[in-house]
Image (cartoon, rainbow, N blue to C red; front, side):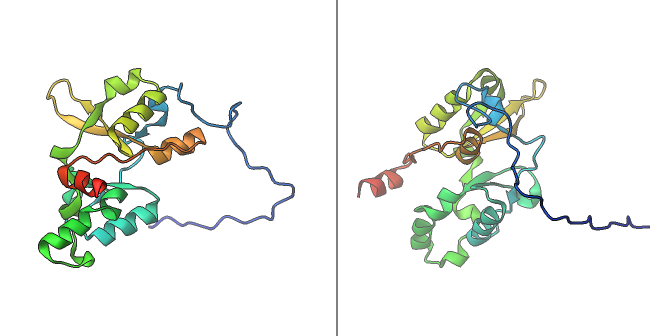
Amino acid sequence: MADSYRPLPHHPLNQPVIVMTPPDSHGAAVSEQSPAISAMTDLSQIRPLMIDPFATMNDANERMIAYAVRMLFVAPSGREMIGIITAADILGEKPVQYMREVNCTPSEVLVRDIMTPVAGLEVLRLEDVQRARLGDIIETLRHSGRQHALVVETDAGSGRETVCGIFSTSQISRLMNARVEISEVATDFAAIQNALS
């Protein structure tokens, strides 16, 4: 027999109304001096958002908007990760260059066509993150010109790496109650040419 659920009753608010916030003299949950791990999205606690490599670029964009994120893991049928796709990939020059090369429309651009494959990713090691402060992570993101940093844990026996966490500038900004500005860095020749022209 299926579980029987029932709606909870609604009640009117008694005014004045206060919104609860965590006690902190600065009004922020973390600061640059906080342990870095305090701002990491722990993938053992929060399910990562995935998308199939054969999904369209528009599908990826809609999924990011729906879940208020700027990065998705690319994994066929939810299996091993083969790359990531970010809002910058979708809104930047990659789709335009791809459409010129293969003469297609935006609706024909697939995630696999513009994603960053695993071979092109650089990651942080969990043991380094555990010794770092949040300011170190912010400086790392600024230095790399990226909005996200993946964190991996290495299995001592097999040597296999598992992505166990993510740092994102949007999450850090929310936790610090201050905007973290990162300038995108051109990482390939075409992107450098576009930036100069």
